[in-house]
Image 1 (cartoon, helix red, strand yellow):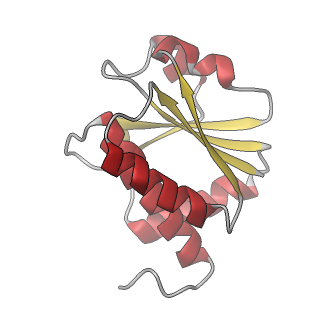
Image 2 (cartoon, helix red, strand yellow):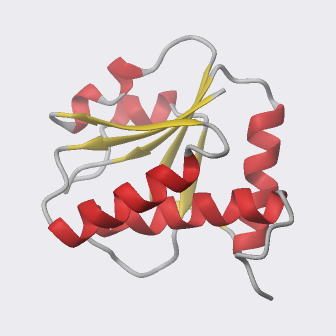
Length: 141
């Protein structure tokens, strides 16, 4: 299974680009992973294919603890998608069709982050989910 972080626009900040590279490399240990950028929010859904599971990162989505996200991540993987795609919208969020066509929505919490920061925070949590599922020592409780 392939995991994709589908984002609108390019990452602007160098320190975030560096962090994305670190976590992308770490994630490649567990699964085929890549970040795909589209020009605008209207193009997000055009990327989705039959057999994909499309999850939006949106403030109205479900919130999870790190362990809760790892459990939900396992459920999504167990559902058998060809690709697990996490969408990050642009400055104005998602269009109506993208909301309608998504399979799930998750929130990183009630605070507002820049779209660049959401990318990095989510990748760290995705990596943390893998380490929790594998019983590796990265996550401390």
